Image (cartoon, rainbow, N blue to C red; front, side, top):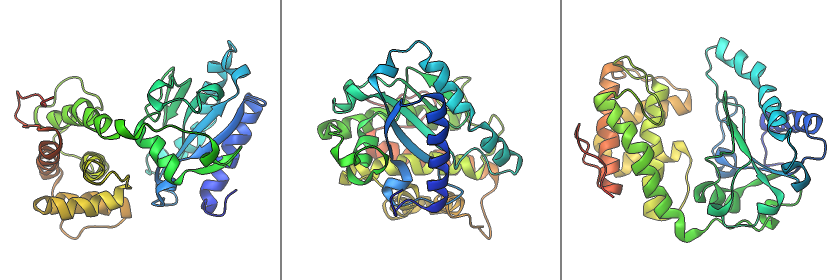
Length: 292
């Protein structure tokens, strides 16, 4: 393992690859870590471990591949269940997207993932992390845990598509999520709690996600969640109270006088609305759609 990989992440990835080798002997020919580890913002026991696994072409055509990848995903369930029982949520696990060996050097928008899993969810034929943002993370700081160094993979993150992709993601994912905070529609991209208030975890997701996108649009650089919180305080200081809730969640800290759960919902909706307005012209009323 590279020395830059923290010990707990090294143990988790070794265990994961051992399971992969039992289920797909010779199947995973390369693997690299992106996400918070690539960005050097990893927090042991709290951050997820985001993997891109390269599957040998001879395995990619096998009829039993998806079944075996499902079993690999299920091998993580005891770990996830233990964290859930301890009230720690479903983070700090290996989230993986699988791509074909012959696709590795294709433009990222031209790659069709074999499958992916995030937390308790497994998706065949899909993988959100095959996108210009994650590919840039890998090119800039990806950590190789199997196969040749990730800087020799020949990845094509399509730099010219980075900002258009982010704007599209803000319109299609984050704007509907912001609308749900105000109107609570029956369906949405990511379901938020039906109750009035928001947990600190939901605040973290909703505030820091758009903040990261805003920073990348402004600078072209990918940042982690904690740095996104600092950026939010600098760029949108009027939303400091709710940003501090998100940062406290990331850091595992307590706030002396936090907003109530109901106030969190209102403050989060306002913060998201301002970030979206600054990026894609989102107006944030109950009936408005984000502008193209």
